[in-house]
Image 1 (tube, rainbow over the protein chains, first blue to last red):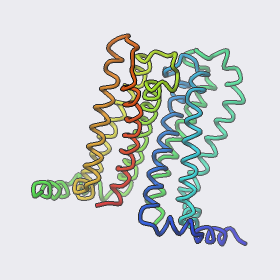
Image 2 (image 1 turned 90 degrees about the vertical axis):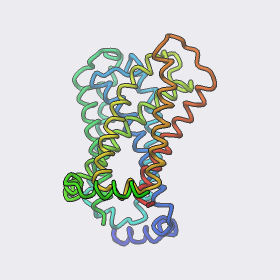
Image 3 (image 1 turned 45 degrees about the horizontal axis):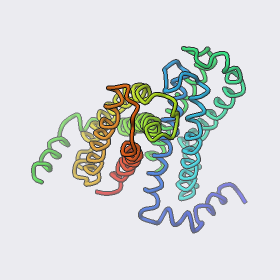
Image 4 (image 1 turned 45 degrees about the vertical axis):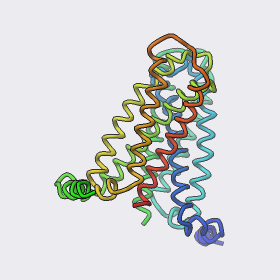
Length: 164
Length: 159
């Protein structure tokens, strides 16, 4: 079975048809998706800005991350689930949309950036926990994350205008 | 409302309005900036309200938490009003003649007033006393911002 016929089958499942043909389902899923992405980007931005040297409610980076990251992950899970349901409602059109493809790529890049941060400079957070501004690698990770997530929001909105 | 209808027609006829409509990238760009600013409000409100509710960082002072996040929130509200205004001018009929838009505006005013009500005593004094009513209001405020986002998206679907 080719990828395209898989996408066709996906969008003909009863669940996908309920979303694409129901009056309320699609807009409601969009609402949930926007609430969740706002919480993802809003909480991640607090950490990114702290890495760039802006104070948050905690002196130390470690405590700030421990406070906030569980909410970021929770919201990301909701955004992913709502996004997946929006996707299956017209899977072939989303999958072939250039803005949608780039959006997924940038989310993957944000994940790589985060993993790299946690495996490198964050391992030595004890040495710079309360330092303002933080060391250059941490500032770079914060700036990269902030730019990627803003781009993800722009591309997400652009999908709605280019899907047609 | 005849006055509203004539205001919509006047606004639609201005050159700014047609410029916004005729330039294809303006509306998506402005909407994307609008969502980025919503993210700032949600992030600031989430941390401040959860602190007031006693859920996160209980050992940090309420005053410091309110002080750190409130400027970001006001800045984002300013961006939201400016970008929202561009959308109103570009498509006045779609927005001003829409019941859901006015519901959203009512919820936004309530959200701003409730935010001020919850933060003003914190910014003024070192008094850490925050009783159950404030905790309940903090949860209510988070639900209110969710309702604002829902009504914002529904403007596109209900006329």
